[in-house]
Length: 577
Image (cartoon, rainbow, N blue to C red):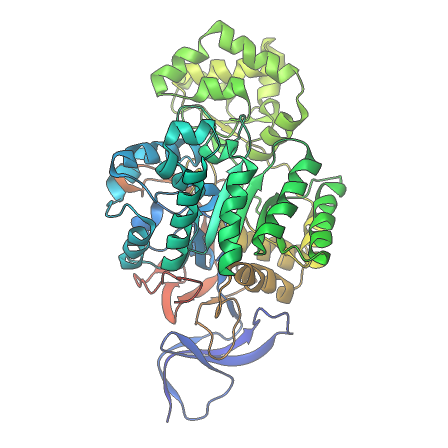
């Protein structure tokens, strides 16, 4: 008589292949799915009654920034609460290896700005025991993990390590430096990296460095990127994540085509998201992706499907950094920010920039935080004299007080010691357009959670639950089968996972068990504040309701939203455990 470790009894299996759902038992042993179906007379050490529940493959989140957080939070919450069982680290070219010992502090400062990860939390929560990429991967393997992890080569870290920070930001690599970067990428790939990543957004990057200057890769030249792509082509393995949005669109796309042709490996192109009214905003880039595929260029579209809101104060806000004026005002210590906000010249620059109606800047601001005019005053941090502003829009206040709306933001922030909180209003999302991306484009992957980043004003790690509740259950514009293919199987294919992303006998037992009717995000729009980071730092969180069990490599990590303490996650070198 067969004895299994775990028995999921009587659930509805949606296996991630787009096959129609069916009712079956799932039996798990030694971290693998041992059998799907009836096994008369078998027993199990643990049985979960899944009657009335969906049994599906765990979600694969390709775009996260849990590089620091995984060192103190093995489950990479909030993603881990929402059914994510595998994450990719090192996105956008940012990370912590390779790193010389005397650059550790500066690398953390870099992440406090570009990804808004609290410095004191990193300082307390990270135990640096590496310099090289192989040493880093060994350290990551030793660390407790509640999810599976694969790791890019963070290209900014690589360039800084080889060239030095100033040189890496201001000039191309020399021939010798380029060869050294290629050698280190080979070394990292030998040790188990999955490829490399880059953010290239130009001098006015939306995610700047600690001092307000562009990040290293923002000014990276084509030749340096293509040299790294040659490494992947030579090896016939790995993939590339790239965010590129500076300059003429046709020029940008032509470079991505050249990159794909050079690497001959999958390219994850960030980020495609639909507008509310104009379907060409998403159709145009998706047509380009499909045209590339027809020409043999392996490009995937990473799509922004989450609807998490933003709530922020000027003490911490960094996502208007594409604006030179905003970047100047919001860079520095809190006292420095206060001084700059009081500076008449800097204030005038902000007003003038807002009136210049730069289309790119307007789109970025609307997308990442909300048009400044439409922000809502959500909280005044106990400043009684400001309470009458709560719930009102910046635009309404500006009209009443005969001020420019930018001046309203600045004056309220100063009056509240930079702790007045502004809420980006729910702009609404077009379910029809989102469904069109997910149903019709063969290479469109949902997500771009940014999990672990921008923790004081954003909760994108809940995108998986939002996808299922919004598009599948409530709007009924994406089938359950299609949803699980997009959330698990397709990203697993893109990342090169060899045995994950589907429910199949012999596959790794990464599984979610949930009640579609009860599935929910708590709270639904803006996350609650919780002081659960090292050094007493706080973040916003959205928890998940409706997940009966989340299972990683055959072990239950969450039961009805409660963490079991199990850490069965693995470092997936070359995509396998």
